[in-house]
Length: 115
Length: 116
Image (cartoon, rainbow over all chains, first blue to last red; front, side):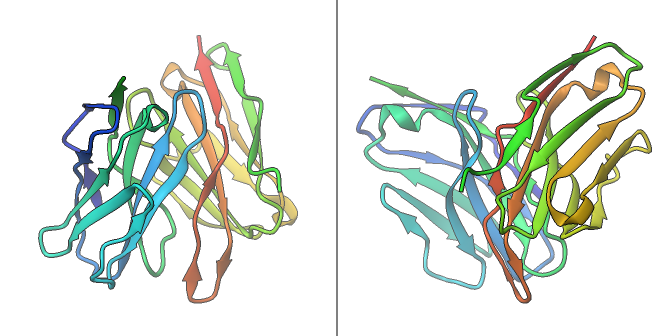
């Protein structure tokens, strides 16, 4: 079974600084997707960024980028120029490319932005 | 496109009662998912529909839980004889799914269930 681990329950960063959230996963599959989702307080979960395992190039979305290390099964999220609106729970998630469609989530990291 | 909606947003019930939640997916999405999220944890998969067919169920889904998606549109999740351990946020998500390709899951706001 696939598992996703986020070892940082809480992180904080000064506004305008850069922060990196860590995620490791375990799978025997070679093709899969990895995601970072953001869940603001009392608001619904939204997708931040997605990475296909077969792509060597790390995904980027504006201020958000990932460091995908397939051999190490590591998938970290870097947030540059942190803004107050980035404060949220961040979840790392895994999904097989074929077959089962379910997302497997990590435990989450609560990110606080200090003004 | 109004996004995924869920009703009710909050439900308080006494132990032993039955509850039913509704999820309305994004209109063109043929795939619908249910997840459960307890406080301080990531969501856990419960079940998944493609159109009206229920294609996968988690072992978390005991026989007290049942989900339906008649006509491949909205879905309902029913919990019979609720227990205090059922207290959680129940999240619904939908996505488009075509042969050989999978797309982003869009989440609803969730239904928070409290069993007293």
